Image (cartoon, rainbow, N blue to C red; front, side):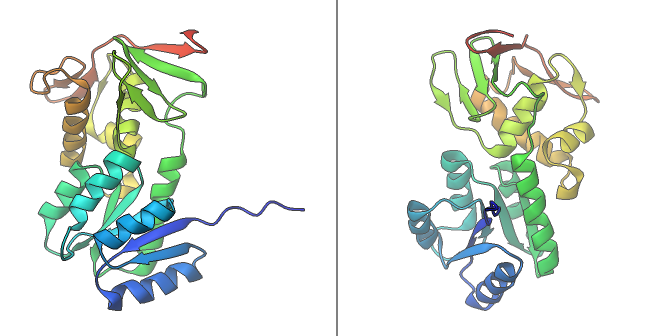
Length: 246
């Protein structure tokens, strides 16, 4: 008896049936399991019934828009998300990346490109971000990051929600404490060049992460800006294995 690989489940959220329905058909032919939702409200209902592996999310929708739903997906569920954005709306793309979307595709798009982006985001989400000490926790000044559960806790033990992109960014810093990492290197470590992102996206993700771990994000203690160089994680970092220091 062979174990068949589990099919990837997608949630496709778009109010335009003329785009959503043929796209869903195409994605099914590519081997995905696709559930459709015509609005953010319908998507929220679908998420209560089943958790997909990735969400394809239109930005411009009546009622709750895609950016609002994206923020919910990233902060409460840490779901990989690709935004489907209208051509000529760079602000939406920048805001989407800032709040934690993993990638974006500009309409009209080639369906084969979207499939490539889906597989790229899923690879990044599944790729281990740190060294192969899978049971080891990161610890810095009372904060702890569990790389297996992707759970960040503050010195009081409170869980701090982080998106997939924030998790990968923090892990990149924790693996290289006190090293200066330039923006190009951070793009490679966190998103991969296939995401076609840009320096500002890195800056936005750093800003979001600072708001979660810094006492004063405008005067950061942990993630320091190096003028002309990039960023440096200034704290000492330990690996904690099975309750002890690694």
